[in-house]
Amino acid sequence: MSGTATYAVRLGVRRGLTELGQSLRSTQDIGFTLFMAAAVLGYLFVRRDDRVAGTDLLVPTVQLPSILGALVAFTLVVGPAYALAMQREDGTLLRYKAMPHGVRAYFTSQFVALSGGVLPTVLVVLIPSLLLFDDVMAGGAGGWLMVAGLLVLGMLAIMPLGIIIGAVVPNTQKVGTWGMLPITVLTGISGIFVPLQQLWGWVQAVAQVFPLYWFGLGMRSAFLPDSAAAAEIGGSWRTGATLLVLAGWAVAGWIVTPIVLRRMARRQSGSDVEAAREAALQWVR
Image (cartoon, rainbow, N blue to C red; front, top):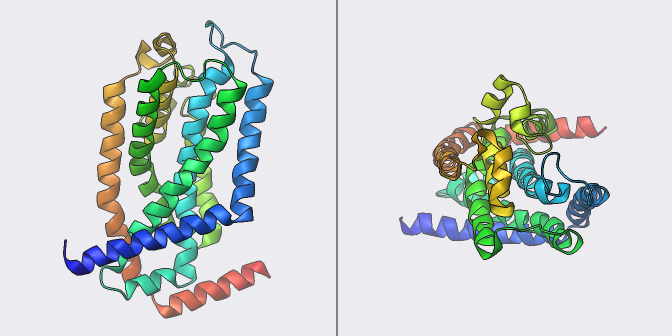
């Protein structure tokens, strides 16, 4: 890597850490994270004594890892999509474009800021769950190591989807339609609240194409006892397939994403930024 490219990466890391710090101090961001955590914990607490049909496992034990996976996936898709759409409109991307290796710097900053922002989302749900519910982690130390590895691999596999959505949406207002709606649908068919094998065959096939299902499956395999695999497709955690699918999405995503960003940056101009600002003002009015 050349000296200019290395400098761009260092600049991206510094910018990403700055954005992460701002997010952690933002009352709005903190409030939204706490609201989501309260909703999840409230649901699990209400069902704390319920058992999953046909098993001795409690509902919080079974659903917590899948819900954590869904929260991470939602954060990694919608967060980057909104961030990129907004920074395209306010001229941030245009300023990066003017720098040598500016797209690389921008890419690095977003990865640092958004991946760092996932940790608070996980902790505000996981730590109270460990105190409120029994048998949350059956895998012991090995399970925690697997969770850490899955979080890294999941971020690499899922985050590019959010960046690509943010690069192709026409404006910020469309992120809800292009980002939140698809991720909500995919979450609903990814075996979080309803076992995947209870859904139609074509729905199972669609769900297994995307990384969300595999990330949730991996999280369940880390948290739950081996006996719980009987409720999964094929009666197995399919650990090898999980790692291969997530790694495949990660490799594909990090090849395609810089190409999409460069093409978007080439089309971006000062007049586009001004038009986007004017459109945003009209929308607010």
